[in-house]
Image (cartoon, rainbow, N blue to C red; front, side, top):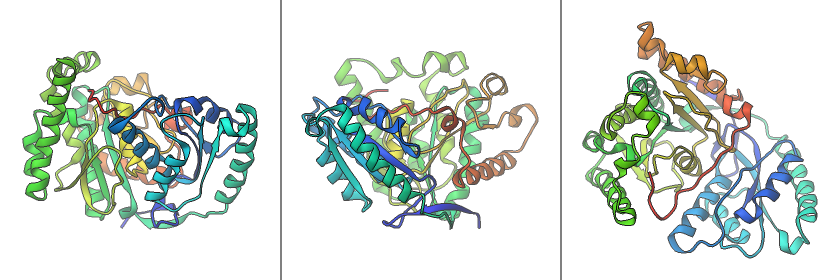
Length: 389
């Protein structure tokens, strides 16, 4: 049984990072959180484009995702910073976080603190105290069953479906066998392969839900824009990489889920229970928003395949990049963590590649930084009520 060294949280979950999160409640506070975090080592933040002028289901998606970021087990404690007049009020974000977990969450309101400089000073003092407390938490040994592994792909080409995604799928199956959780997402990239996924559903409810989320996506995009989801998918880069149709892309995409039974299906950014095998989260195919949704759901780590190459990362969880394209690895090795191209060029067995990737996953869980972390990539996007590719 493989193990890793992680941080036990008060709510019983286990983190592989020990961040203090400076969480912007809206775009109006986003630059302030950047300035706060820049002055305190051990904190993380990101640029948020939402949280203001939102209503209804659209606002709820943002609130749930922000709550998921704060509740993620990679986060020790949270300082929520709001402007004061936005839709996503800081106290509401705090309440949503505390519905998911019991960690320390503090709030600061720029308009009430007396402006940006006073907010930064107060927040940095508070953040330094939190970072000091977080440093006292020691890593403990845990089985890989405590891991919720997100899987994702972007900049896909033909090698993604031939090498990188099958390697991730084999790792997914191994993690499921060990009692862990693997998350398959990117609903728009199930189109044309939904019947294969549905056959693997644990029960009829999940079987029907797989068809439902795909139908809803296609219908909503058609009704909202008058366009077909295939108008933007495959992307120009996908086509240059040899993918000719969305269905062809989907058949490669779903390899990331291996062969395990699909045991649950989650709405975007909803908290994943853990220890339940392979599950699906209903997300867009867009890289930043799909990665963001599953991290909000509780993934401590995301394994991300890319045939064309991408620098995608996230502030809260490592995004480990794998490619099956030897030329891409040669050109973008500073963005990619594992080269699976030997499956195509050297007749390497997928089993061997999956063991190597699993070893690397354990190293990352133990603290090794992935390329996106070393480069400081924290791009973040959140699903909107209006569906998009």
